[in-house]
Image 1 (cartoon, helix red, strand yellow):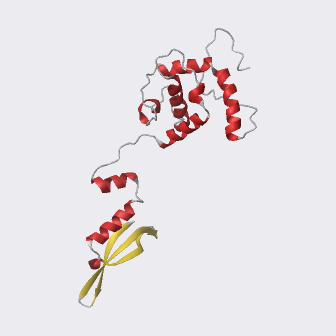
Image 2 (cartoon, one colour):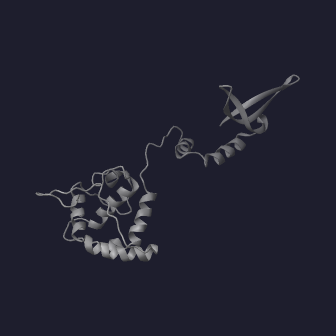
Image 3 (cartoon, rainbow, N blue to C red):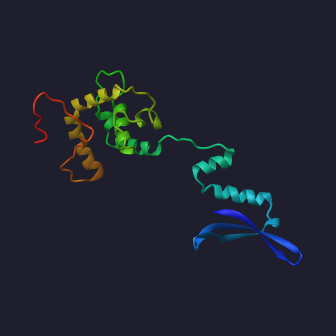
Amino acid sequence: MLAYVAVCGQGDKDYRYLQIYHLEPVNGRPRRGVLASLGNADNLSPQDLGALVASLSRLASPDMQLRLAHGDARLLSAKTYGSILAVRALWEDLGLPGLIEHGEQGFSIERALFRLVANRLVDPGEPAVAGRMAASEAHWPEPGHFSYHEFPQAMDMLLRQKDRLKAELSGRVRQLLSLPLSVVWCELTSSYLDTDGVCPLPA
């Protein structure tokens, strides 16, 4: 949609009308279709037009709102935040911060595992360990930086306590979601096994 000043002549005098229009195809060619007429442009003060622009800007895209507020400034990027908070709320409702044991590692196992899980849920196209979100592309509720090698260490700690966690989470999921849970599927698309003999799992 665009603004346009239409000039109409009556006798020896011209009148200017401010209109809002959009282009619509007619017989393969663009044609101006008037959506609204705001009246005589000479009767509209800059303050009136400024108030109209400010009102409409609330419905514009974030990038356009930034340009209107700061001239030529552009929104280049923004960190993921809202979806991370939603995952964190579910994580805490399940009681995972208190269930995960930290061992003797020099970093927070629970926070590292949360970043891997959130990365998988919010941006599933990224590999879990090397996910960009786990490093810098998201705004995390808890501060802290994790190195590449700390994520596999956190996964090792998770494997050591998986049986206890599965038993605890089974009851909590049934209670939280009121589900008659009997079967839990494990997602293995990013997992692999290294053995010296024949692996019985594919059979």
